Length: 124
Image: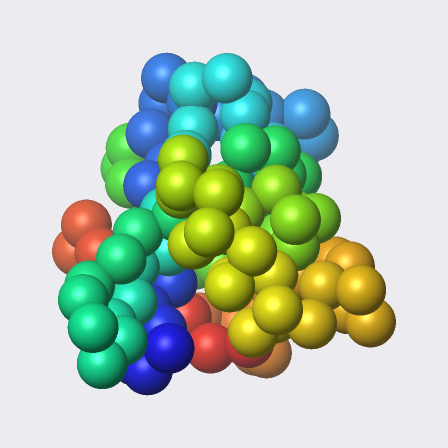
């Protein structure tokens, strides 16, 4: 599997809710209203898997009804929760990810990120 692309989780007012107060608020994704899709390519074909369960939390600074800064992101999912709907493909992905040795996938923000516009790329 070459060229794994983990697409940014799209966060909207319908899929998150504030659970804190101060200059930056804590937001948690509601898994029923959110999705994580991983797309990749192989020597045979392009493929796509979706996480069936995950947890995500972020600290956002909101100014004038838009996000201006991200200071914390923590995302976790069980590696075996990535499903394509095709048994053989799921098995190959689990082998490639070595889910028996690395059962959890975690992403955390490397450093605070200022946001200009509607989309951003964060490093972790």
